[in-house]
Structures are given as C-alpha cells and as structure tokens.
Length: 107
Image (cartoon, rainbow, N blue to C red; front, side, top):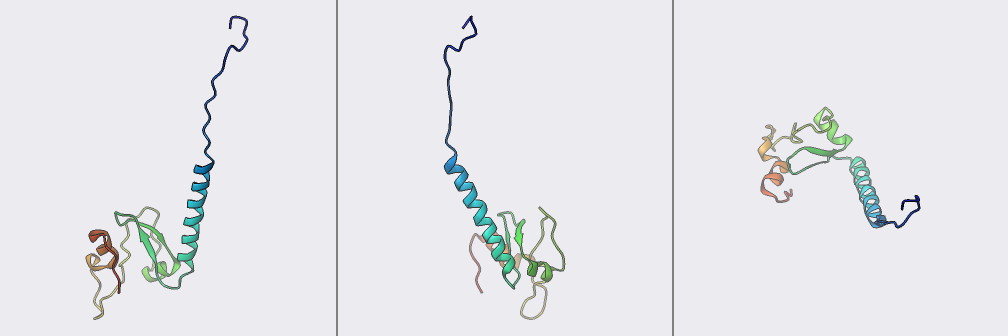
C-alpha cells in the first residue's frame, strides 16, 4: 500500500518430488545399463534411431580398432565378416537391418 505495507501476496508452488525421483531412477537405470554393457566380454553397442552410436563397450572398441568420438556417425559393422570371410556390407549388418526395418535381428 502507500505506507509500504504488504497488502496481499500470491504463492505459486509446484511439488517436483516425483519428477526428481523419476529423473534419479532414469539416471540410475542408464548407469546400470552402461556398467552391464562394459562388463560383457563381447562387443556390444547401441544406437539412436538414426544409427548414431550412443553406447559401446571396450570389447567393441577392440573389435573396431578405434574409439568413435562423441556424436560421431560410426558404423558398428566395421570389421564384421560374412561366413565366407568377405566383408559384411553395411546394409546387411544386424543394426542396419533393425534400424531400417524396425525389427529385431537374431542369429
């Protein structure tokens, strides 16, 4: 008011406890997955829907002979071979088929 006294107030609060718990659970889940992938003795990697590698383990680095940079488009089929020993074409690798056809590849 004209005397400098508070005449009223408005409070806007939002409880973000559940959101914070969900964020923490997601972060813990991602760490668990990353730790699991790193512990596996075989080459394992994941990609986003566009084929950009999002997670890979030391065994994958050893198979590829290099470490992809963060955000780099890198084909995980590098150095994969057909049963006859010929190089596996990128379009024939399981990850490319999965991304293109939206289905899992087994075997």
